[in-house]
Length: 504
Image (cartoon, rainbow, N blue to C red; front, side, top):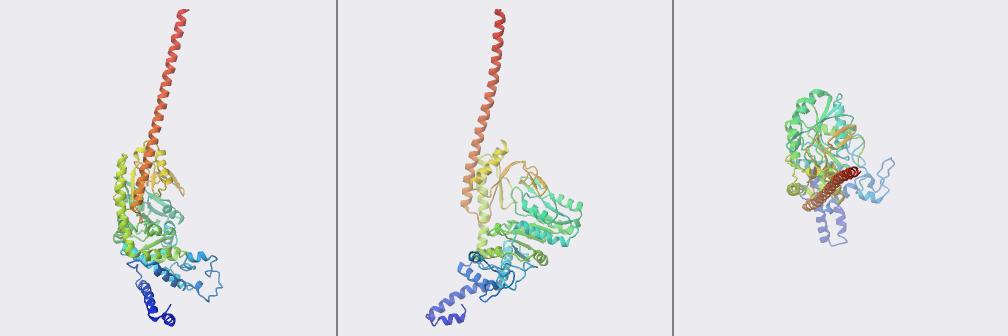
């Protein structure tokens, strides 16, 4: 309702009451105006009524919601199901145009505005999380792996001779396949063991650059967030190598936005060397449905090149989800979640350490990994690999999700490349182990329930192992006794035979 509508309403209801309602609406509109003027995440989260008013106002700016619209094209925002339309708040046209995912659509001013605001808010949050000098970013409706592929394909046009991507090993299939899908040959750099941690082999990276030739290397593809005992790559040193040899540097920052340490590494790497783009998942960092990622960087023109590489229009769903989430939380709400995650990491670490010691195991010392923890399973592994994998299946069937049990000697072939010790990020890690992570949104009750169920599972596996050992021991005893009886019978037969001969 505008001012004229309120004035007309005063003829039906007391003007005092109408003015009060008008002021209430203005308070909602004030929040919306500040958002559009500043393009930053509000400090305090919005209530649902303000959010829905804002989304409704945007949606009616799209041509498919015009009262007198007459569409005669092949794509006019028609939706067969009213439920589907409501699910998307009637944003049907998506985002971008055929030549650029960030371009404005003439048919969909509201969706285009939604896209621009979302990208602006996400940029603000990335700065808040620790990468202060980032210049541009955009939400892309693909998960992390395909978003990395988009970055590599953009670099292809800038480096036509390049065939290789140098990749410090991390045993995660999607980031590996992102290079294969883009048509490049991954050059796997094995990690080096420092204490319990697996760290970047910088000498091997530089040696490989020199061996292949900088012109034939598309980029270095590094990683921040990862499963312990692997830790984030040495981003600063890699960034310096990339700057010295004129090689692009793409960072897989999948769930690193929630970690101030990961974000600090990116910021420092860009300060001392070269980082061209860093990619992060929406669902892992902002607790929205799977299907979106953020591509960000320090060179505005390069990030625009990536957005123009995306073919066709795109779904607005990931942008809508993260916009609603950030406006609901506000920057203070998001900072609170980041703070709580750090606290839960410390709590999980302490509880897992206590439990591991109770079973003669230990928590691996991985201080450079700010999200993931690992607990040894040496006492299970010394019996057989089956005991280790059994623990993983027991946790899963008891509704413990996310925990990873990593046995020794696993071999996996991914897109024609064979990895020994797969899941452990190295060919021969010293022991089997169990992973658990403290990710954004985790609560204390999650940790307590996990520790309780893990304790029960460990007791059950140990009990079964003891019983198997007893049975195995009994079998050996019976076999030994059986041999002795046979010998005694043979001796008795010989004695009887001798007696028979003597009597003859």
